[in-house]
Amino acid sequence: MKLYFAPMEGLTDALYRRVHHATFGGADKYFMPFISPAHSLHFTAREMFDLSPRENAGVPVVPQILAKDAAYFLGTVNMLRDAGYTEVNLNIGCPSGTVTAKGKGAGMLKKPDELRFFLDEIFARSPLPISVKTRIGFDFPEEWSALAEIFLQYPLLELIIHPRTCREFYSGQPHNELLTGFIARAPFPVIQNGNVFTPADAHAIDTAYPALTGLMMGRGWAVNPALGQEILGGKKLTKDGLVLFHDRLYRAYTQHWPKSAAVGRMHGIMGYLGFCFADAGKQLRSLRKSTTPQEYSDAAARLFDECDLVDTPVFLPPD
Ligand SMILES: Cc1cc2nc3c(=O)[nH]c(=O)nc-3n(C[C@H](O)[C@H](O)[C@H](O)COP(=O)(O)O)c2cc1C
Image (cartoon, rainbow, N blue to C red; front, top):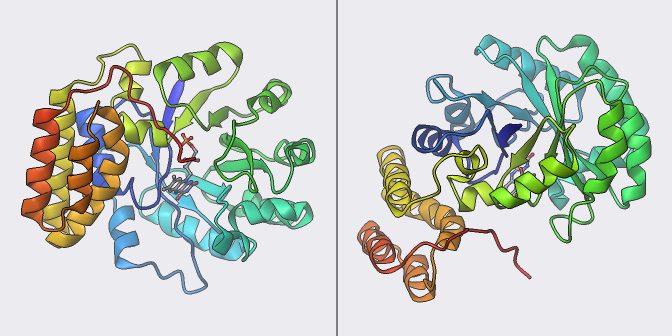
């Protein structure tokens, strides 16, 4: 079973991916948070850093593009090919209102004819193989059967399916049952994504859908950075491993970013890693309140010293 680290804007940037790969590994591919090209194909300094082959050396990464205009998409693929990338991923799943209002991301699922036209263009002209990350519909799961027929027409490198509608955002359980008939017919590899938070979740999906090529995991892997290696039968997360991961991340961010920005980024990361600790309410609260690097380092040291790890770290979605 292939294991893919999901793209998570604001979290899984080049530094995070590099540190994760060096400390735990277990990911066959890391999908980068999306870049969204405009006609100038101008990307921000942060996007260029994230895409730079030097920052990604030795890490199996796949750039992701959010676009509804075939010319912008293809221009970006050409640039990525020139930079040495060998595949790209198309985002047709982003549920954010600002993205779908522009008809991008999951907004593309609303207009199947335009989606088909876009896919015709990009699959005819792309210099690189394209995988797609999609949801099962915009408003209703019943939209999936028609969308599935569209995807089956194209030579996708892989199809990653988050089996929720755009309207469902991340709430409720994914409609995994909709995958069954589709996997049997798909001429390309199919990857499930959504709510795989523990090794037991991964093995349950693998057993229920043995024809799946793999799983893509985001929040569960952000909580337990050893999730991939655990699914593959390797070592469980240890306190030492978590401390090493944390310290390497913090060092990487303080080396590359202004100190206050590094602390801000660590708050985001600890929002996930915090689920690894038992009875850590007090320590996590003071960590969240820290603003200076010194306050942050002290609070993190207290958390690691005073709190044990839970047996099975699991992401708990907010109510
Ligand atoms: C903070 C955050 C940022 C995300 N950024 C992206 C993104 O840039 N591109 C994308 O395709 N999906 C993005 N996603 C969706 C995840 O890749 C994934 O599909 C989602 O978290 C469901 O998988 P999970 O249940 O394993 O977390 C993001 C999700 C979160 C929570």
